[in-house]
Length: 463
Image (tube, rainbow, N blue to C red; front, side, top):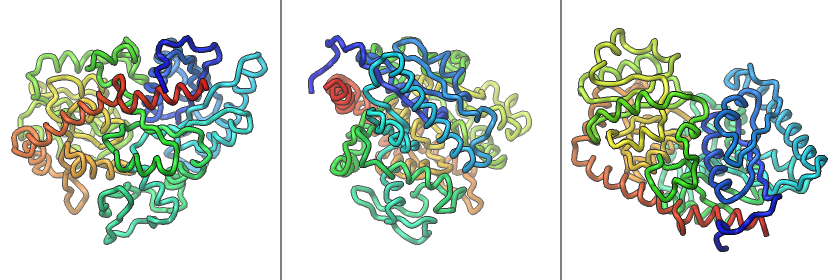
C-alpha cells in the first residue's frame, strides 16, 4: 500500500490504545502511538487509576487523549496476591473499555478503527469484537521469547523446564536450560505468571492484527516463521532512537521529556556525561523491577572500584542501602550514582562505552538501536533468552557467568568490562553493535520494513 502521509484522514480516524499498566508496557505502546499520530490518527490512550497522573502529564496533547478506567487497584500491589490482582484488573478493564466504547456511540462518535492492546490482555478481544471493533495485539517483547511462550502453551516445552534437555524449536538456535525464560520464581506451570505469558497466544488466531516491537532483519527467520501462521507485523523499534537520526525527529515528540512518563529530571546525568571523553563510561542499570541481593550490588561496586573506570550507575532509592559504606564518597570523582536516568538519551550519548544490563526487552532494543555493546546480566523471565541472543546470535555483548550461589563476582565483571572496552572481542562486538544500529534506523526510516508495516497497518484501517 502507498504512503498515507499526504492524505487528509477522515474525522473518524480514531484508535484506542490499551497498554498493560506498567512502565515497561506503557512506554513502547505510547511511542507507537506517537508514530500513528504523526500520520494523522487521533489516539485515545487508556490508563488506570495508578498510572493516570503520570501518563496524563506527559502523553496528553500531540493528538493523544487520555481516558482513565477506575480499577480500584491504585493501592494494591501486583506482586502481592497476583491471582487476585489480575482477576480484579481484568474485570475492571473489561467493563471500563466496554463503557468507553458505549460512551463514544452514545455521543454520536464513530466507533474506533481498532483497539491496540497489550498482548498480555488477550481477553480484550472478548470485549471489542462483539461491539464491532477490531483488535490489534501488541507484543512488547521480541519474537524469539514469544516463540518460546507459544511452545510452552502448546505443550512442546514442558514447564517446569528440565535442566539437562536441549530445546530445539523452528527457526531458533538450540536453547539450554539457562537460555529459556527465567521462571525460577514461578515454577507452577498453572501459576498466574506462566499463564500470563502463554495466554498471549490463547486467541491469537482471532486477532485482526499482530504487532511486534522488533524489526524484521533482527529476527528475520522467526518473523518469517510466525508470518506463515499469523498476520504479524514488525513495527519496531518503537522508541525514538535517542533522537540520533535526523529524519525521524518529526515522527516523535519534540520534547525529550515527554518520552519519560514516570520521572522528570533528565538533566543531571546528561550534564555529567557531557564532561566525559567519548566511549569512556560504563553505564549500569538493572531496570525498574529487579532487586539484586546485597552481595551482588557489592560485587558490582568492587569491580568498578578495581577497574577505576568512569561509570554511571542507576540504583533505585530502595536499593541504595545495599551499596558498600562510603562507596558514593569514595567514587565521587570516578562515577555518578543516581536513582533514575533518561535511558534513551544516555544510550545515545557518545561518552557511553557499554551497558551493564538486566536484558529487559526495552533496554535491549534501545541499546541495539543506539549501537551500544552490552554486558548481559539477566535476572528472570524473558531476560535470560534475550541474553542468549545478545551474546550468541546478534553478538553485541557478553553474557556474564555466575558462581555456585548465582552471584556474578567482581572478577567476572572486570573480565567482561575489560573484554568489551579493551579486548579483541570488544572490537567485533562494537562492529556488530554499529551494524544493528544502522539496520534499526533503516527499519524505521522511509521505505524500511517497520515503517512500511506501520503504513500498511494505518492504510488497512481506512480501507
